[in-house]
Length: 72
Image (cartoon, rainbow, N blue to C red; front, side):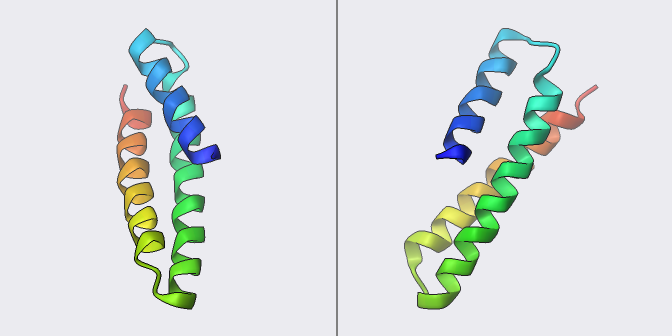
């Protein structure tokens, strides 16, 4: 739930052109990284395809958020 919420918040900040979008996007990347790691841990235990897909999605999002956080 945290992952989905921070992604929505980051998108809202970017759409508004908020001066704080870099900070929010950086936090979004951190949250997505932790979520991806958690999903990986659960997928290793049972080779759960849904958890692997979750980890992949979170990693794609964290890369996007990192890029947005680095924009000058």
